[in-house]
Image (cartoon, rainbow, N blue to C red; front, side, top):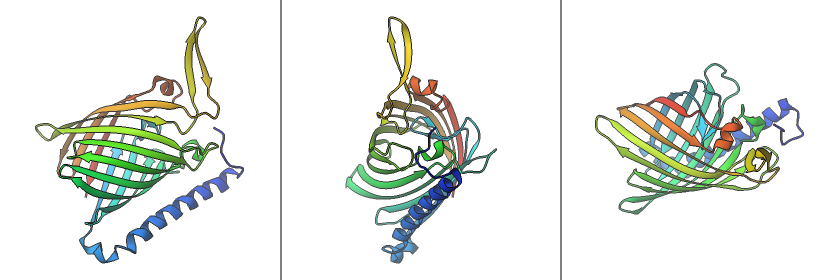
Length: 262
């Protein structure tokens, strides 16, 4: 994949690390200054997880291999939340598969509804020479932790095409007996990287690229979750546009994750 910069690879890697460091430092500074007086009443939590693959909106961030993930978050009574996370392939720890930072604010807009607005930055040092890196602004409406409706604006920070993209998601979670629950989700997004499209005529099927045009695709999942105390095990059936699967961009049809929270 063509890299959207004239810098040599070593310099580009340094630029991406510097870019991520700026984002992380900014978020931490925002967390520490206005709400320092409330730090004692905030909640700090973390999660460590092992997955069979790292997936982002139906796309494969890593090959079908074991991925170690770690995340930490700080939530304040005011509704603000700040988090950072990192993921890496177990068999190949460098470079990181993903680094992530976010800030969000939640409001109770009705007895059963919450509204959450957030900003996030995703960095993929090992994926596509930075073509998947992006900043996001999101708005989510949450009903009783059962139903989530979200819209997202995506601003690519790597690659050749920095045109603003969009995505919309709906997610459903329902508890079952014996510590089980079922989850389902569906979404539609404008792809950050070009991929082949397929059309059929009297001569058969043909594949072509749209050039710099922005393609859209659908994705979804159906999952079964078991959770007790800090432990959680989830198995998902991942669904995604067949064209992306032909281009080896789609996630594995089955993804499993075990996690421990503290």
